[in-house]
Amino acid sequence: MSDTLPRGVLVGLIGAGIQASRTPALHEVEGAAQGLRYLYKLIDIERLGLGAEALPELLAAAERMGFAGLNITHPCKQTVIPLLDDLSDDARALGAVNTVVLRDGRRIGHNTDWWGFAEGFRRGLPGAALRRVVQFGAGGAGAAVAHAALTLGVADLVLVDVEPSRALTVAEGLRARFGADRVRVATDAADAVAGADGVINATPIGMAKYPGTPLPTGLLRPEMWVAEIVYFPLETELLRAARARGCRTLDGGRMAVFQAVEAFRLFTGIAPDAERMLRHFARMGAP
Image (cartoon, rainbow, N blue to C red; front, side, top):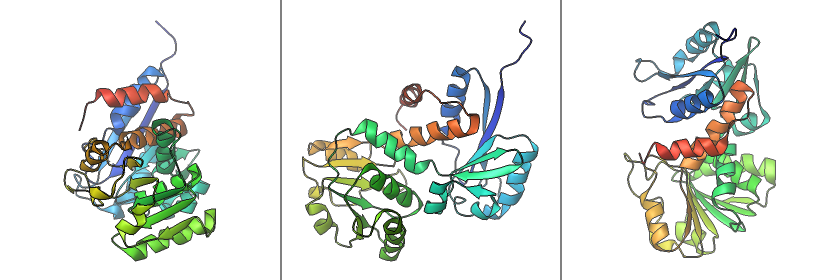
């Protein structure tokens, strides 16, 4: 019998309505493959009858119980920030945290959403044209995806949101970081998409509870690419229409996996096997 037990890692996810999340399985299976005793707990504030105001208590409890860290999702990505000791540069720039590392009595906030989209895009749509890209949605996830798009090298990013003021706020932050001439806001979807190389859906439209598409699919052209962040379902109405028109497509599963890849690294200090995590995600089947 070995004198040493596998290293134990305890982490969790705080959010509302998260029972269907695939993140626990992604982390635990990869943890086991890395020789860790890895336990990922769901802390569903909706199921617990709590609101975001319970965050201070939940963070303190996680620290006392030896959690290595926490993933944070809706509606807590902004609320958690004042409760942290420090932020990564990306989390500070985006004003949103989805990963908190608990180490040496300190709480450090990170944002792995933007990197998750960027890495999924690099692998899933290699060589995609990036001259002009139209992104629908400028909410919390949209801000991270827009940051990723500009990091990837998009020359002209056009933001379209049902609340133009929200798109303007995101655009202002992006201009400060990437330059005033690389991002703008539009209100007419047809005009915006007319000369675009690609379209990103960073809205919830396409999820089972928000059916439909964020733009009229008749605007899509065969030479365009279309990327999703929705992965419940993996095959959205937008992606079906895009493929039918001959467009290259990227589903939302890659962002989901790669944000988990980076969070796993932050929690454990171990670089996970991203390809193995992608394969495990695929084996879980279509939502």
